[in-house]
Length: 261
Image (tube, rainbow, N blue to C red):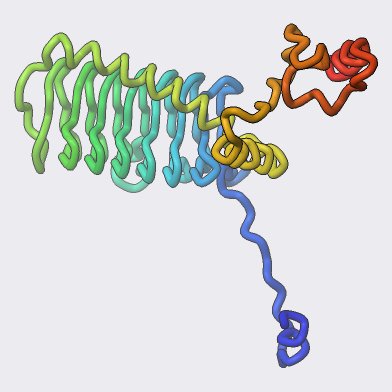
């Protein structure tokens, strides 16, 4: 049908694949991402003069756009899903600087601002041009830190415009670092999954189906690399029994050595 439709077309149309926008250079300046950064999602966009430190993550749908100024993101920092990190050229010529162990919530906007270490910007909150978040500051979800505002160290800010609400408790302060560490660990798992090729994904799917469909009383598949148990009739662990010769148990050792090699 596709071929027939193509023959009937008056003007030929060539369908083009959209290239990945995970990392994009602007005016010859490409993002610099630490080799041991936790994770940059396939659907995230890191554009232009951007530096990202180790153990940091940029999640699904997030945009970090350093096209008219530079953006610096420290270590152990996470940029949440659909968050936008941008800079300003005309109004004040401000870069965006984000320190270590900072959590930027889903859908948040950080525009030409400075965020010091160990801060939290809640989901859908906005931190606007020229504003500064000192260390150990939490901005509540949905709040707007207006241009030029300085949020003092150790306080919770909330509202539109955001105002100082109260001092953070000891538990809240310690949770900032704990949250960033937990997110960095989770990001490693996502990085592993997103790095899989089509064959690995298919293998995972088949294993999942097998796990759900196989009767627990039936032979279970062996774990790759597990050769310590000679298993049924000395033929190896269940799942490898058909890879050996029933009348020659020593065949199992040959198969094991071949698998290891």
